[in-house]
Amino acid sequence: MATANFVDALSADALDQLEILGENIRLARRARGWSRKEAASRFLMSVSTLQSVEAGDPKTSIGAYLSALDVMGIAQGVSSVGASHHDPIVRRHL
Image (cartoon, helix red, strand yellow):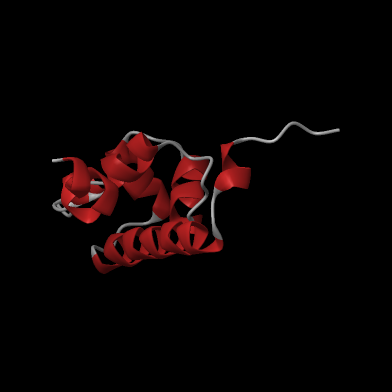
């Protein structure tokens, strides 16, 4: 029997959000005229890792996603993900 892992805990909505993020990264890369090989080199990752990022693979490290966003200059707003002002439970305890 296979052991459950963190991917099993992700909701369909969370998986959709990752897929959208990957698609946004792909669109930004293509708008810059970069091939996957060129972008992977700029992002300091393998082409296969970039393919996983662009597919929204939940097993791909958040650092890989952030590297792509940062190198393209579109990482603004990342720090607001999970911020306390989005969490009603945290806000009740402040």
